[in-house]
Length: 549
Ligand code: TPP
Image (cartoon, rainbow, N blue to C red; front, top):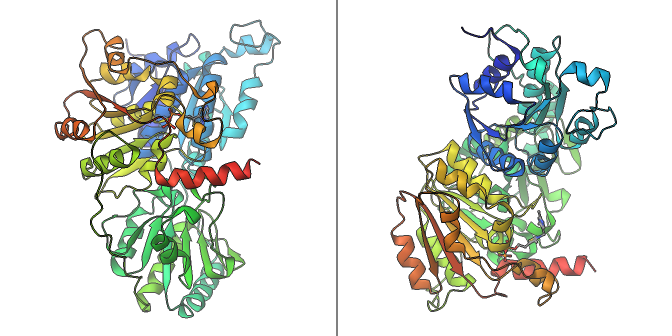
């Protein structure tokens, strides 16, 4: 017999309508019945994870490549394990819906001594904890469920940040009516006088600028501006760059793409091409300490136009205008004008890279040769993130990195999530040995689901990035030495993974040459010197240590 349409079905239909095809998480008795509806659902697939933190990272990785993600955990114990991951999604504007199965309303009303509570009869402790890391949240009941599901999802989509739904087990079963239309997300329209004023002041500013430059960052990606920005750069030749978090926004082989901007840690060419323009248009930028060598950007207010999701600034004046409209206005104005050309790229000459034993330098050079169009490259928050800043991406390739929240171990489950969303794309994960020890269990899920990511595991004998900041030889920067190439075997009974341990640059080249179209999970343990750093990180750590006093 078919079960009657319920709140659980409504929620799943709404998720499917938002483009969610997979729900990550871990079961618990408060969400098991909801899970039966997931299993029955025609388009939302359940993806079990090894723990809730990994599930939150996986949902985040999934959302970064496909738009929206979703996560299911159980009350208290599950949701608090996930909260670190959700906080990362909040900090970095990734819309993930966190659904938490909770005790029935009767038990809550009576304040019963239920498992997974603090034992004080207060069932809202965890709901309150989630407030700081979500843009909208609700405790669902029979009366409000459908309305609140829509409200939370709508706010999530507008703000591009996580939402939270507490779903008591009995509420999930309540009858509901299927939605008869798609979820409408209203477009915010500025007052026409504001739009006019923005256009007027932007024109004045641009007319006064012989040379302009564009610096765009991850908020432009999150708010869907990649197509319009790419079109704009194809039409109007101007120096343009992203920060590390926005990497992948542009076609990096475009002649006027100057590189990844890292403020004072950028090359002279990148820095001058951006900072010396008469007007710098900063679209969706956030200047994080680690990405700007400790806030060394030279982008004074009077020479910048700043475009943020819901407002834009010209000089010191702010206009309440949505990002897309501001960018479209700037693009139209640029089409009417002519600017001097971006500076010539200095000749690089032939750089001789030492092959021999692997170093950060020849490792990243080899990775650069390996990249192909449409790759999804995930880099974790150790040396990997900083090395990746110097890569030039082939067309359609993107980088997933979490430098603002900066929780090590993120990239491995996020790679699982990204590969779940895009099974046909090649996923390359570059992660330190320290970071991998936090979240390695998700290798099991990758093998279970037949995924074939290429995993470059950087074995540099511990926390190298921390050694560079402080305590180079202190025991707190050491980790347990694992037999990395045996790890995938431990995570699947019939091992469907291939593993290598490489110490020489040519060995790495040889292995990567076989992985143009990997058919199974490939783990390459890359042995690197303990204290070696990518050039960018050397500059950044000097700046950070100074700031920490
Ligand atoms: N715990 C979490 C969850 N996140 C953090 N950022 C830290 C601790 C502090 N931390 C930042 S980088 C790092 C640590 C412990 C070491 C990373 O080492 P590894 O992953 O081996 O990369 P490597 O620098 O050696 O390439």
